[in-house]
Structures are given as structure tokens and as C-alpha cells.
Length: 94
Image (cartoon, rainbow, N blue to C red; front, side):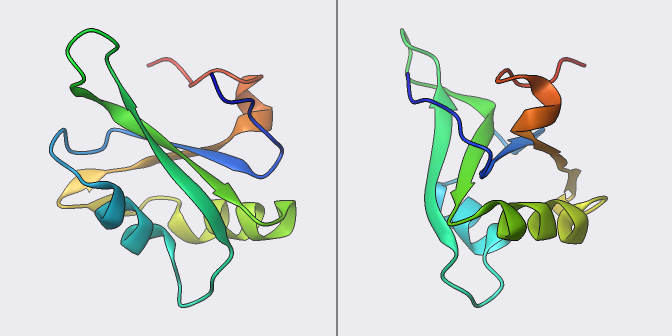
């Protein structure tokens, strides 16, 4: 497991057939502040679980992202966007 940082954002309720590039495109605003995107997959089946983590270069960019994406959608699905600090290292339930 990769250790979460203060620069890591949780994205939930993503379409199950979304690609890493699609998540990256959703997240980027023309800047290169994204260090990485990780789609979470089931260990056994390797099927995408519907949530991902995005790591930014710094915490300021991560906070800007959360504010700018609050209430947005990806392919008609409302995306849950949370800072990892709020979740103590675990994706929020619900």
C-alpha cells in the first residue's frame, strides 16, 4: 500500500469503466501539479472499485482542487472529492 500524504485527494463515485487518463483529464486544469493518479482495484478480480486517489505536488494545489471540483460530475455521476486529512487515511464511507 502506498502511504497517503497531505497532498492526496480522494475521488469517489467514479464510473466503473473510467480510465486513469480520464481521471487525470478531469483533475488537470492545464497545470502540471499532479504527481500521480491511482485507481483502486479489487485484489482478486482487478476490477475497478469506483474510487481513486490523486496526489498533487503540494497541499495548496490539493486544497484548490477540492474547492474547484466540489459538486462536479464525471460522465453524469456526482464525484465525491475529499482531502485525505479529513478521512484519516481511509476513504470516507457512505
